[in-house]
Amino acid sequence: MRTIIFIVIVLAVVIGAFLLFGNDTQAPSDEINSAASPSASSTPTTSPLVSAGVSLGVNTPKTWTITLTNATVSVNELTVKVGDTVRFTNIGSMLHWPASDSHPTHTICPGFDAKKGLKEGESYAYQFTKAQICGFHDHLDSRSANFSGRIIVVQ
Image (cartoon, rainbow, N blue to C red; front, side):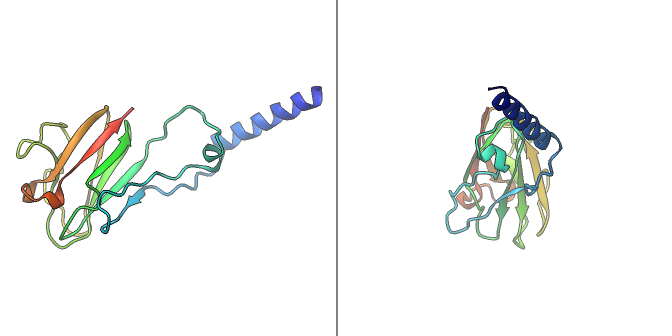
């Protein structure tokens, strides 16, 4: 019985050391690029230990990317957690200005406003710090449903 307890303790220490000092191989952002299915969503990848059910009870913030093309936004609805960041990246040749609703004041989620048009290859990122629903639009094309959506921020 002592041997089993000893093995369990050693395994717990090894797993704890891996979680604290292990090499995190997760990509810096989880891409959401699905022009064929604008409402598609993705779940960020996790480490093998989290996938196996080992949890430290800590929510590691994720970065989500929404791409903007000349014709549309890649995702019209995205659910993220408090502390997560959403990055809007323009991959089209037209300027896009992502901002919180309502147009033109952007007051639904104060601070969520690129404050300028993004050129091709430029990005704007915003970290969500409280649970809320943030509608968004392209300030330069506010009437187009192709460039609007919402980000649902949960605990």
